[in-house]
Image 1 (cartoon, rainbow, N blue to C red):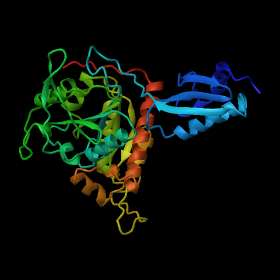
Image 2 (cartoon, one colour):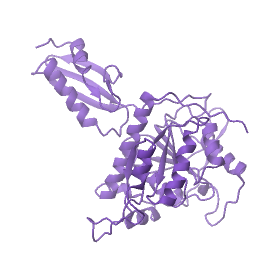
Image 3 (tube, helix red, strand yellow):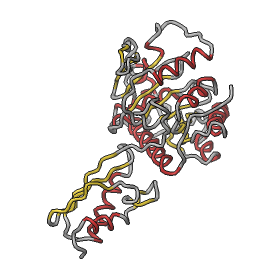
Amino acid sequence: MTTLTKEAVLKALSYVEEPDLGQDLVTLNMIENVEIDGLTVAFTVVLTTPACPLKQLIHDACERAIHTMVSPEANVVITMTSRVTTQRHNRGDLLPGVKNIIAIASGKGGVGKSTVTANLAVALAATGARVGLVDADISGPSMPTMFGVENEAPHVFQGPNGKNLIQPIIKYGVKLISIGFLAPAESAIVWRGPMASSALKQFITEVDWGELDYLLLDLPPGTSDIHLTLVQTVPVTGAVIVTTPQKVALADAQKGLQMFRQPQINVPVLGVVENMAWFTPAELPENKYFIFGENGGRRLAEQHNVPLLGQLPLVQGIRETGDQGQPAVLDTNSVVGQLFADLAEAVARQVSIRNNVAPKTAVVQMNP
């Protein structure tokens, strides 16, 4: 039996690997506040995200390491907490409190990208993460409806430096901004590209986002001015591509994916979400009908060597809850709610991996 010392504890924990990051907890600076009191060994494990799906596995591995390498009689008290990682280059004071900016793109419209984004944001917030969401689809804003805040209006206040700032609407723990809050719901927003790009810049730079772990941007379909404005305004941590399984959607999703991988843009692709992967009627919950084809999103992910973050079914309840302003993930006991929670874990996991292995992102410099 090894003497109970802080050094012995750290040596034992140096043999516990973080499965996703491929390094031990001590090297990753994930062990803090080691205290010895008689036979009690207490320490804190700082995970890279509150949505970590491997929390229990890491907890058990730490306990086993102490009992095996330090003392089998030790009373091991482990506090599991988290500190979301970041690899952003902050340029001046532009969003200095935002750790990760995630672009949600599709290429094609009508694949459920906004529904996925809304549920992903709420699911991340439910884990304890600080989350913001920019509805960057200027001509077709849908987030006010999906969050049930169509009649809300953000107010403007004077910030500490005298600059006017917009206060985002907060619902389900998510800070939210959309052009839908600033224009009548029945009005069409007919703007040229520069006007839409200017609005997006405002949403990024003139909103009081404060401290955030994840800022999600629900991008419009296609590869347009909005996408270029985003990567030229702030360093984007990574992109999530949403598609349905059929060939028409996959062709556009592939263009969206390749846009982020262009050398002059070079934003890491965190993975692919296959939405409407199958249809399951409420009265036959075990049945799957592949209306739009089968595993198209999986094949796209494999083709481009990126993770398949999740496959989501076409379920009437998802549409109904979206229309009611209550995202499906709020029903934590439902199959769909669990699938969205799993998706949040998968995205958070890929952000942590990306921040550990990929170089820092920088603002894209492109000639006009």
